[in-house]
Amino acid sequence: MTETTTPASTLRVATAVFAIALLVHGSDHMRRGMSVTSALVNALGTLQILFALLTVFLVFRRHPAAPRAAMLIGFVSAVGFTIVHLFPDWFGPLSDSFINAPPQARVTAFSWFAALFEVAAGLAIGIAGTRALRARQPSPA
View 1 (cartoon, rainbow, N blue to C red):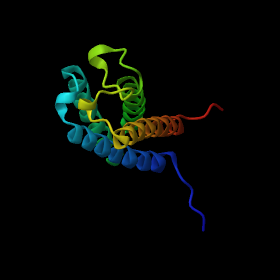
View 2: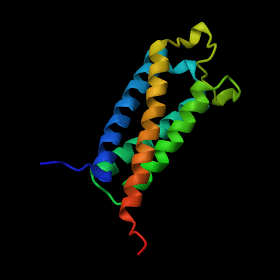
View 3: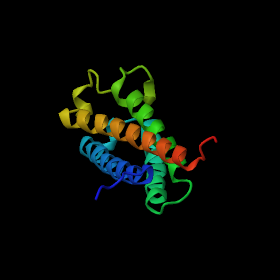
């Protein structure tokens, strides 16, 4: 007996990994302290968490909007975390750059792991959402 992986089941797995990545990244921010990031980064991070939690809820409830929500939160999260953490401090209050971070930022190898995990998980849920959405659309005859 062979099991076939469906786009919907792949989306659920990617969503679970994304939720774990959220927890890992959030724990790094708690470890580092919320005062090391700007008010703008904190506000955008809070919005991202709220939309991410909504997406997790939609996916596991198998809501019709789940694939679209996964695409949106996944790709926006991946780009956002890349800009905020992985680029040099080019964006002023939108930066919490890990590149040449000052000691008070408390950036460690775990911080890098958490940010890269979040970017990869964002891409994974975004791609899984795209696949699930395409699987719903009828193929041209």
